[in-house]
Length: 320
Image 1 (tube, one colour):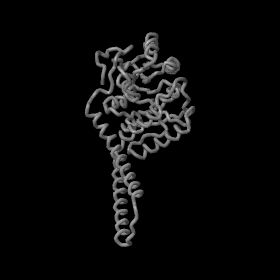
Image 2 (cartoon, rainbow, N blue to C red):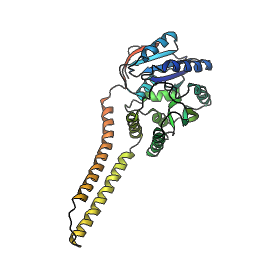
Image 3 (cartoon, rainbow, N blue to C red):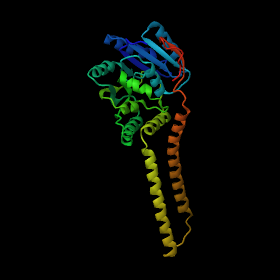
Image 4 (tube, rainbow, N blue to C red):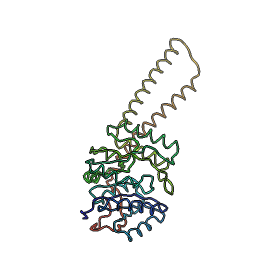
């Protein structure tokens, strides 16, 4: 085991052939300037382009660079988890390869860590190159998530952060399948602080989080840390049931007392559709939780590793 490493930088990559070289060069420049031992761990999350080959070439030229190759795509949060599992540093930095999060912020994060903070997260004050829709929905999501859970998850914060070794060790013990790393770090309860920055546009390539993945990510975050959706579904069901009973008495009163009768197909169908829609929404929420229970019960490893590059004393363990 490599105990002399001071800092580990975990970089999940998925189809980043256009940016990985620039990302490596900027990371190397920053880490060399610190004048302490370090490793940079690229985690190939089943890339379909030339990213693995480029990363392997970098590893041949620089022994401080390491590469974990997944057998297939397991997802961004799982890739971060794998990097943490094999990181040896006393402090671990997580950063994406697209350079929207500036590597030049790492020395400031290290300074805060040396002041005694266990978690130093990067907080976005401005997001360049993103649509108004994404900015608004991201802001709403973080604030909604904070109100839905008792865990204090900071707003406007992504996965770009530094964590102490003891926090990393806690993350290694948490093996739930539907992972929300920034929530898990906050859940661990260690002393944390923020450094602010302006998020830049992607250096090159396309976003790996289109709308569909963002929605799924939001579901993972909410359902991983809150049962309130189930409580809301229950309250909604009770409210609608009470409304239905009240409407039933109104109809009976009109028919039996006021002797008012008229064809009610339109209203009946409308009410039926509304109630059926609410029922399906509630079942969908319940299904999300049941699906997660099913995933956990299978007890499969989080990921499967095909190859390691520049790692020592790993042995044959390739899944966790």
